Amino acid sequence: MVQPKYNRDLTENMISFSNDFLQNLIEVDGFLLKSRSPTCGITDAKIYAKIDNSPVVRTGSGTFATQIQSIYPSKPMEDEGRLKNFILREHFFTHLFTVSDFRIVKQSMKISALMNFHAKNKYLFMACHQENMREMGRIVANHKNLSIQEVFDQYEDGLSRLFAKPLKITSHINVCEHVFGYFSKQLTTGEKQHFYTLLEQYREKKIPLSSVLVVLRSWCYRFENEYLLNQTYFEPYPEDLIAISDSGKGRALS
Image (tube, rainbow, N blue to C red; front, side):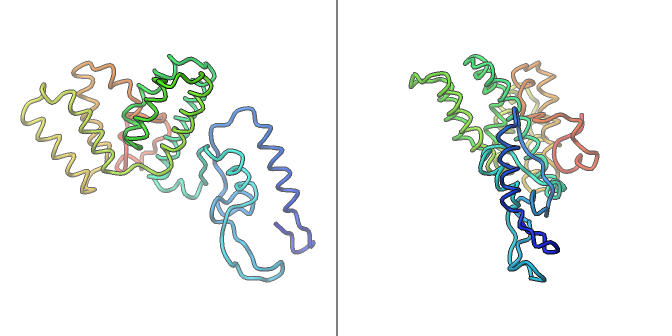
């Protein structure tokens, strides 16, 4: 990180500042950075061959972003440029608010609180990665008689792995079918057919996930299923963060 005009190399200064700043944060759930910044770019900071009038040889992480990845490797991190993509924005918000909720649970250091957290996130976690979700359930059950600290640490590690990649359409379909199973015996033939038509249209990317979820959620209310109504899968982050332009891309506006 150099100022060519003054021939000043500020790399060590920035690394020192980044370490001091990050290591003195009291609580942090995630990071939103500036794209293409020499300090904050996550993957798109320009790297030059030489100081003066040199071409860009590649792009990479900025100094500050690199230190975040080193000190907080499991925290959600995005830049404002990538958040223009709805899928990435939804994934970031979902990850961020889940981590924030978990932080509060971890502060309690109560297994009962962790069990409630895992229960209300069951279908969200299933959509992320079904096997990881089951493994986290086994951690909560604590058949290995671990200490409470070990249980929370292992669970947190599993949580970070869950959000390694954005969710897949096939995973959402699997979850929707599981939720549908709660009502299938109480629905008419026409209602069942309508649901499967919606699911197929979603699979073919003709309609957004929100079109399926709004029907499932209406059945949750109709049949007064409090367990499903408490599932974060239907609203993984505050609806205030949903833009009008998102309504045809992902989750429905309530």
